[in-house]
Image (cartoon, rainbow, N blue to C red; front, side, top):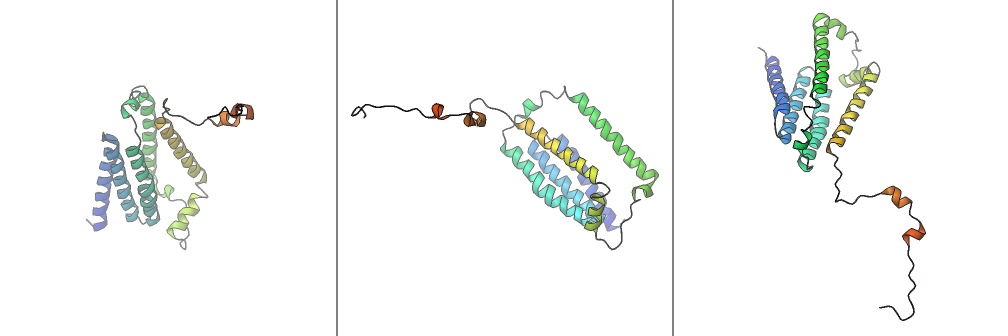
Length: 200
């Protein structure tokens, strides 16, 4: 067994175990920490395949920004997780249907790779391009619509996270911009005529 193969198995085992713990951990802070560990091991796998740009992007963007932001949000927001889990059984069939669709897609991709691996690599890149330039050329030309669709998926996930954590409290005063813009001089100012020498 070569050194690269040993590191491949090490990174793969740790990444799969940490991904399982992201779902299985009861504490959400521990889930985010396991997610960071999974990202770091995925970056190691990218380095083994020669995609150093993807590895650095994974570490800088996802570990350094997104996962740390998740950690701060989970630690600082007073989220009632017991309240969020009340409708778990109600949405379980939809979640299982989505999971089944994702599983079928993964099996299709793996099956296509094992049956015809040359079809996946059907788009050759010029040899004089660097790894980053070749990735950008393929991503923003051939797969530009899929790239935009991934952006919409992330936008939907962000809106869902905002909706789940947004709670309107009755004892907190909020700004009503429409009411402020509708104010007139008569409703905002009241003139009091005080007789001479009657003031305090």
